[in-house]
Length: 285
Image (cartoon, rainbow, N blue to C red; front, side):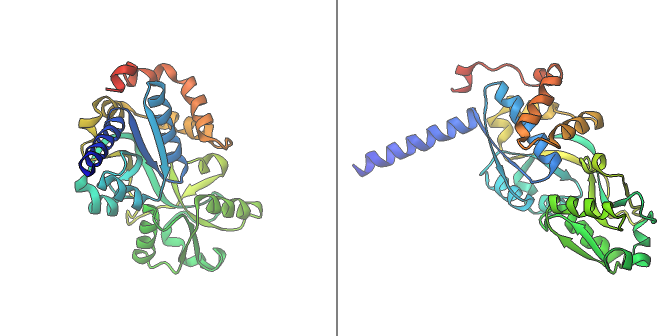
């Protein structure tokens, strides 16, 4: 009886692996705008072709760790080679690059356009105007948080980074703008903040915040298990206009999938050919 149970368990595990590798895709995504939008776009396209896509939201560190263990398949929005350099150095030997979605990712310190400085080097001179030296940032697990801590050190800034969430950071920006108060935040492009507020990026003479690529990262062996999906990831590219359009669709929509489906329907002719049609019986082999 014990031997039969072991055999049955092995058969169940084998069937589960077959379903996952031949049809299902587990995608992890972060809680920031472009990451959500790009992930849901991939989900919509894959599901149109008959794949089953599951999503799970995590911070970047746990995302890289899970992929390195083979516990998930894809992360659509890694900022490489710089912003997420720490995670890549730690886990990259057990991961694979699946493609580059966008090649002009910009990060840095950002202020409203009415603020009368233009460089990070000018921040200390006006510390009192920035609530006594606060930089509003996002979660400590984000790569831009680490780069900002480095900027504080290398520029000798008499500032403290206030870690919260993207939503809280944008709320603080909106509140400051209502009375033209000075505020400095951690910002990046692409992001809807540039459409919502009149902002400017502070010059960064020390090059703490270099240009990144929004990169698709997969678990080791994913391309062999899912060659058609891997080829789709290689082909999936968004220019500035398309990514801005995608992000704009999601700004006022509570359900990102509804917004992304609207975007996909507008650009169906562009995205549909990226993944060849699959027969349902082939997917279930």
